[in-house]
Figure (tube, rainbow, N blue to C red):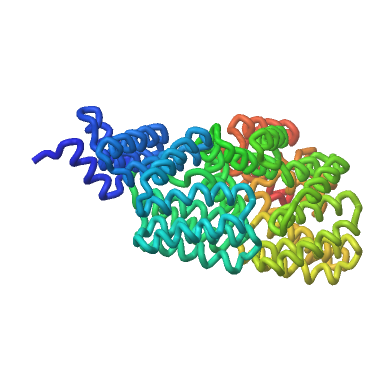
Length: 541
């Protein structure tokens, strides 16, 4: 017997096939208005399928349906979820109105129900967002007590999540992380509803990124990927989750994937304050790849949405050769940074920029502070950054032998983290240290290895500096070719066609064709085979 739309929608919802559930329940609703329980199913399916407005509308109708039936707890629950969804999208007034309605109903009826605990969550979150973590913690704790009493895993999990976030914000990271892990245990064990699972995944990943706990962030991101893949029609990596996924891709050298993910994050978060973080990540990628105009535009847009454009904008000014502007910007950003985590985000750039400006003393002080913060937070990423900063300062002070030890530690740590860009930059510093110690062979090997890694990443500005260090740029033996044209020539000689070269260097085929034409003109060649022969003759391959 063929199932009708409502039965198919209920079945799809139970199978967590959210796209199908949304379609079938919407069709059933058009035929005959759904009852409150099915409207809640429709609201959840719409939310997880990415239709925010349909979800808000279904929760509102479910609320009114529960009110007509005299089901006050059900009406409060629907008001809570309607409000939370709107607040998550940045519609604070509208969302706050629904939360206030739910609270009023509970105050008027004085019912002893689990919804009393859910009503505490928005208050706790608002207190936390205002920076009062100490005030938020007991509210989350009170909500957890209600959840325990009624045996509600959703409320208990939200309470644990909130307590972990509060402790971390108070600087009690070692105390806060176990609460996050306990919340994640409930999620991975399938104990909570899908909407709660998505909220917890994203919040925990964000918290791990904030405290530089890369291992946990990667672990939970992988778990989130599996969770999303198991649910047909689910819109994955919503909100800040998408931004943090971009950050992880960037760190691991998957820059092309990071570009796509950052673009999806910008589209998904369009019109919401969180879009500033997505725009910042886009700008970072453009800066690293050498498109400074796009990077500057991205940083300015991120700032317009409330995201501090530092340290990226200061590093952009440094790459543009505007050292004084770069120094002034990073100095102000560090002065305004409060707390260990905020300062740790600025200090590596501060060291690099201060050294470029010749202020070794300030760079040394910043490197020492970063080392102390790394010890306090005990995060591998910070230990790597601190070792790199110490090595760079020692090198600038003329202490190449001691610098080499610190830089080798940094390189090992970056390799363990699987951060190829940072590892390549450290190898360049190791090459400089070897050269100052008179070991030209080791210097050449280190610099060449760094150059190859940067070529693979498409890190144009760093690659140009690397060629200066290795002597390839200053000598200019290759018929007057630019650094980019040399890159293209090498790839032509390796047998790649224009499309493959464009993908490798993350540029357009039209740009590749122009580079190839310039190479032929400058070298007096007429074919790719002749260009290949030239590359081999001049040791470019």
